Image (cartoon, rainbow, N blue to C red; front, top):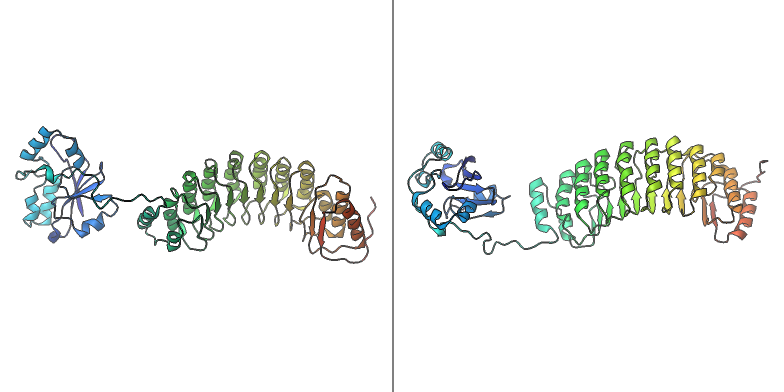
Length: 458
């Protein structure tokens, strides 16, 4: 369509009118649009055409008024309206040009030139000032179903029927739906105002950075959702930055899973300060990412100041060396965490020693998983109290040392030791029997018993 801008009246300056002329000559359709009001006005009452409805589907209403700007017309005095009805606006196109079947080029020239053709007498009936048409009022939709359909049209995606079916449920499971970035952005629109959904599962939808940012922006406004799972969505560092920004403002989210999103040390630089600010989030899962040594320092500093987290998973990352030591130091200064999963990293001897020191200072941690961290016997002995350290090369010596340290600590609150796949000997069993008398609730799981073990000299 061709669009030309023109003023709508002689009396009031209005530059928000556009005359829309179809390319097809036989349509004989001309429509003006007022940006102030957001309405469309067919030039004549009978010119509400199906093509115009589809072309302006994004506008709020299709009015049956004439070509003048309704906003300007409503603000005129009766004298101004009467004078305008007698003379007509100088910039108003001549309707007879379209009705006479002139060529498209002539229509465009007259529209652009604002040709003041013959006088046109208008009455108040031509200017419908009712802003809400009868029978076309939109009902209030707290679930956001209507705006979701509009958002799908805007982002050119097919609506998710599963979402529409469960939009009123307290839990929405949308994992493995292949939403993608655009589909996720459309989904975020109705969730801003939705008051029913409390738990949102969007695992494995490949929403990527833009989709993750859309969900993060939604969570800044939504004050009902408490549990969100964004695992396996390839959010990347940009998505982590958006999530961190959200955590600084959101005060209702309790559980957040960000597993498998290709986060790096740069992501941790954004998430660290957010964890210091946010005191509401209690459960955070950052497993299966690419967090390295710098993450250990960043999160270690954050954990020493965080007062909200109760469980944290950093399993299957690359935290090792100095990063492992600094992270362990941060855990030692935290008095709120109850469960920490550090399995499948690379803590080694230095990290194990730092964890042992941290556990001497921390008296609230209930579960610590350091499986598959390349911890040698020396590190296992210094670790002192660890709940789950199976599948590490600590051997029987390390298991004996850990159990011995518990025996020497009468205030120990240890309830279970997991030495899975580690064979022990008779001496370990004898020690366990003695420790069991001191701590009846202590349970030890190991990989079986082999020959005798001669204790090393001190």
